[in-house]
Length: 117
Image 1 (cartoon, rainbow, N blue to C red):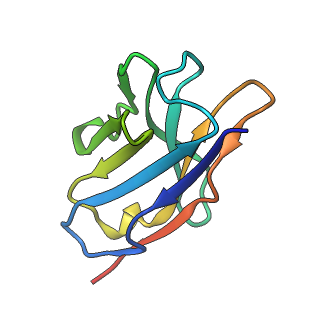
Image 2: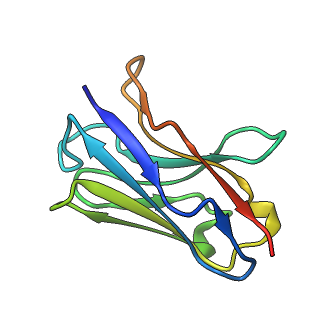
């Protein structure tokens, strides 16, 4: 029973850094699987994969967001964190963490983040 829960601010001002944490229970982020991912969906648009961390700690990023994106993990807390730098209103979206399992995917509830002054 893998469960994920996002946490972080719902409102961020332009130029600030957005930091969101995904807490994982029912499974270890160090266990070999298909990785731990961050995905977002802006209003009226499709899903956008942002990046992931796998069991070894190897990181992968969407090339279009790589320059502003950092994913870190804390194995002692069994969680991983997204940092998105220099946000703009176009970064407004629902942000979700996920663990794909080929038909048994686990998703967090998603968190609405609005970038506005």
